Image 1 (tube, one colour):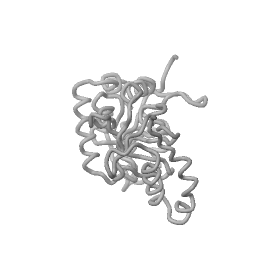
Image 2: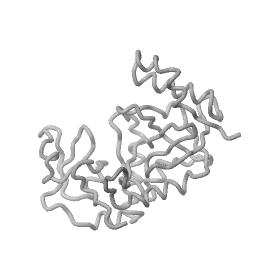
Image 3: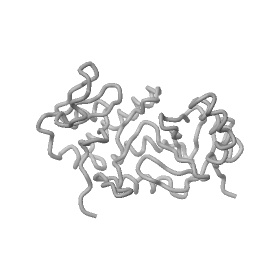
Image 4: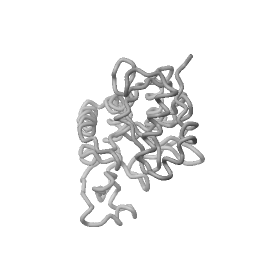
Amino acid sequence: MSPSLNVTANRKATSWVAFFFGPLFQVLAVALALVFTAQGVSAQTWRVGVQAVLDGDTVILDGGERLRLRGIDAPEISRGGKSGQQYGRQSREMLFSLVSGQFLDLEEKELGTDRHGRLVGIARLADGRMVNLIMIEEGAAFVYPHASDKDRALAGRLLAAQKTAMEQGKGFWPAILSGPAAKVGYVGTKSSKRFHTLSCRQGRKVGASNRVYFSSLRDAFAAGYAPARECSPWPVQTGR
């Protein structure tokens, strides 16, 4: 029988915990759900099947729970009438090729929730390789340290891998870094680690003490900043 991570159902049973104690105990609820519904590999590690791949940074685990891969972001794919971004489909296909039909190992200490209440964590294949890192190494995703992420060691490892992928021309990097540059440069937001073009309305709203300037896309990505969602410096998908 395939192991199942039915966290959604278990969260209903533990909703009073989240109501009274907040996001910290949502993580505990997920851990308890794992204990009872997934295949235990060790006292703190669970092996869970993958039900679907939504995009290049998010999968649906057996049982219906979404897992966002910690420390990375991927180009958006077309969804709900909204235009996607270039290489969004390729990024999803790369993640699909890695995890489809596989089980992921999740460690309790590496799981958390973001400000939207979504499960965020590190996923490893059965052979021990980190999925988050592979996506960066292959140029199929870019570094994005979530605001709730305090794992500096992971952030440093992912950023080093991204710089190598950029230098070696992996995945989408040759096309992205050789694309048209913004005439006025880029501005990053220190608190969110996102960057805009200086001509972007949202970019102009960033407070002076919270700003950092970049002359090129390469500089912004090398510093560990990710494209902003609004008026994104990342190119929009064209054609089908």
